[in-house]
Image (cartoon, rainbow, N blue to C red; front, side):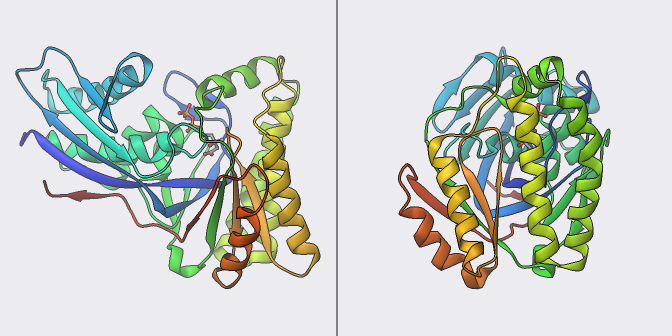
Length: 322
Ligand code: DP6
């Protein structure tokens, strides 16, 4: 092994959502999902295997991190060490260029970048599919961040697959950031709680594959009028299953609803834009490049919206030299 690897992966936002596990131990998803990888939201991660270390170390944005995040990092590193028959610990350094753990899918780009960097550092000649499988075991949405453009992860799938390059259907995403603080319930816990307590969870799992098919067909056909309503339906179906959990999982903040209302008003006045939301209060809005600037300004004016990020489709994850 050459001991060092560095990689960049981009965040992704699911257009057809994943929520819930078919196999919690192997982290296989209960429903198929399809996402758009975002150019403007990146994680840069380096891994150095060092025989002098007595344990793995994880440094996020210059701060040493322990506890559960470190355990998740170590688990991924263990899988890589098993693969190459090594017992050497590693120092991991990671930086996001967007707010962490607020439903902006930092775990997606984070674990994708980690899997890329760790396989390189361990001297594995890993394919993107292998990197995606390693990332998926750590965080299922991370499997999708290994690829650029439109990406799918099948129910119970080991790794994600490329659906279409971003250039085949050039849409943009506006991320209306409504709160910068850490989210209240991490997705892994939130989906476990939904599975355990929500009477609507089974309805979600039953309905999700058809919505996924609708999203996939619309992406293949580059048909925005078909894609948008399916994207909103997927997000709202997922949030309905969360709202029906006991106690309820409410990721919607007042400003989230304001953004959703604004997007609907934009449509009533003839514009084309559609929202989606994940396990946090921010709202992501899918829009054509020609309308993105106008809507960006409108969303930034809303009460409770602290920032609007604008992004086109991003590329595959990639290795960078030291
Ligand atoms: C709402 O991939 O973060 O963003 O596999 O437990 O790490 P784990 O969950 P994670 O869940 C993402 C959920 C979502 C929807 C999505 O990205 O598909």
